[in-house]
Length: 324
Ligand SMILES: [Fe+2]
Image (cartoon, rainbow, N blue to C red):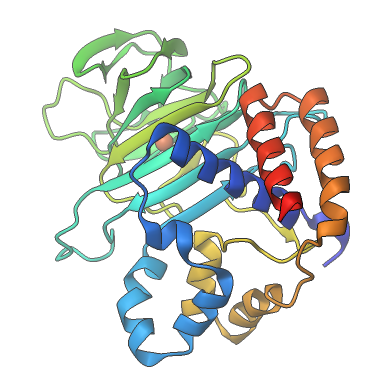
């Protein structure tokens, strides 16, 4: 694959997963050890054993695990021209949207947003979600999608703009009337509920476009999302279409696989599955170039818009690694 097609480096994804681990500890987030502790080599072993394939197949199928995306912009750190888009996520609990008999009819995810780092405007045809603030501050802008009758959502109108009507959503469990494009800033313990498909006769509107970002300067914003089951392959309608997953340059070995990579390993065709196995052959990061990486990260983070506490966490990680 030509280098210019890659939109993130594996070394960047590794750093971001290390940062998420740091925040899991710092904020005491209840994240399954199966997510945090399963190494890429272990995933390869699991897929090689009939029994383990069975016990772990559900996790792989429904996208439980780490997820890092710059939405194809290559600007996760916000140091390039253009939109500063990106999100680090952990899908910790999920149901299977394709299995009506799945008793797990809910999902729980954690999301981590840097200051002004945005998740682009999208709505969900299916999923109703409540996004709550664990730490930091959430900035969120909301618009209703167009629809020509109750069930047929058409998203944008012919001119490619949002609907301009007033609408209702739920903030801190109470209905709130909103103007199209209204912005809110929510602090710790506050939450916003966005309906996917609303129940018939509901006073609350569904199919609400939302763009959100971290509002905390010099700090990370940690969000917990509780929702109906999540399916990132079919249930995101972006206002401006974006690739949901990045093409990652294998400049070092993966520290942990992303959920879409675990899925490929289990269920991809031979070529897709092999492409994930090939990652295991990538050169692991050597102690020698950790020093260089710390300098790079320092430059990146102090010149860029990544928060100070992320920088400190990275520093701690590199120093610990180098002392070993
Ligand atoms: Fe969403």
